[in-house]
Amino acid sequence: MKKQLEILIQMQKFDTVIGEKNILTRELPQQLNSLKQSLKDADEAAAATKSELDENLKDQKLKELDIADNNAKSDKYKNQLLTIETNKEYKALNSEINHLEKVNSEIDDELIGLMEVESELKERLEEEKKSQKKASDELKANEEKLEKEIQEVRKDIEDLKGKRNVLAIELPRDLIRRYAALIKNKNRKAVTFNDNNACSACGYTIRPQVAIDIKEAESVIYCESCGRILVAHL
Figure (cartoon, rainbow, N blue to C red):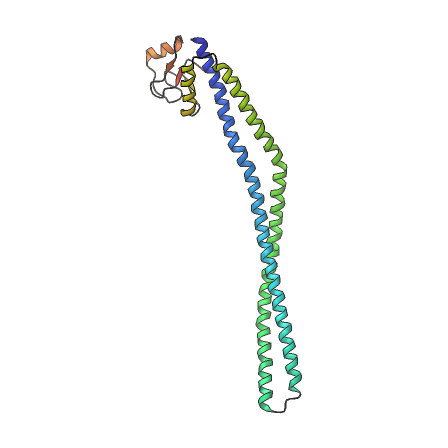
């Protein structure tokens, strides 16, 4: 029985390390995905700002065309003033010229506003390009390393499981099943120890006779509270 308990202790040591490495199999891909997401977010932010800037420049161009069109109309009307013979026609053309000049003044104000926004967008785009480069550099520097670590951790887990399973062959089937159930349902802790007359896993007080039985190691002793296998030490 002592040999079986020693095997259980060794299996628990393997399963403890497997549990730690299982955490890495979740954390490492999360780190990699976080780096990829950071680059994606930076790319999308820069693309959105670039699109906004392109739209701004397009609006500026259209307003410049409107101003040029209004200037052409105004020049045409001014030339017509030289040939006008009646006061009524003169006033009508002059009113239209004044209206076009007022419209162009308003468009000029809008252009100034667009140019100010253009300057802000260009500054923002420069910062976002810096963020893009930083995110890209971080991904390039860490992607291969993290992928390699992920593969190594998975290989380590398989190796540890293999070593644990070799040990398990020497145990009775019912004990193996009990151990496996505890590993699954008790946070990967099937074997615990007597810690000053208390279960080191759940803290339940161990009765004196049970403590003696644990020390003698002549049978498999289970915690009366959490059901884990109790041993003298791990």
